[in-house]
Image (tube, rainbow, N blue to C red; front, side, top):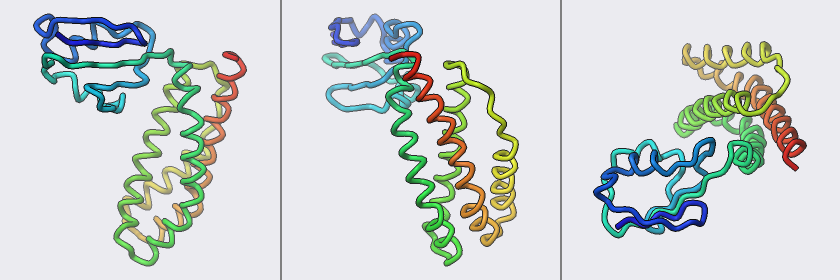
Length: 192
């Protein structure tokens, strides 16, 4: 027997009826909702790891607690943290540039994390456009700065990378910050 608590409602299922976590998830996931939180046997699992769990075999006496919310509710909850993350990142960019210039090996990991963060921010931005009606924003100058950063990475010129991190990326990150603040304002305006 598996116990599932879905948005506070307790249900019991037979393991043999689903076999894998993915089959169970697909059966009980509410339409037009997104997973906000997941706990399996009192262990918090990041919602973005659901795809990794899909083929996991279900075990007897497992308790799965899931909370689903609308995409708008989810964005309203996560965007303040995203905005704070961007502000912190902007503050750290000069020190990342300086560590690059001084040849600290840690700085390359920072650049890799920064690149992944920018990619994730852009994916979130694109998702928001599908969920909320927002005015189109001219991003051409930001794209030029991102291309400059990517070009510096490709050339592996440490000085160019450091200059781009210090001069281009703060503007790129501020544009993301402005966009997410606009989206959050729109969510609060429409759903208050």
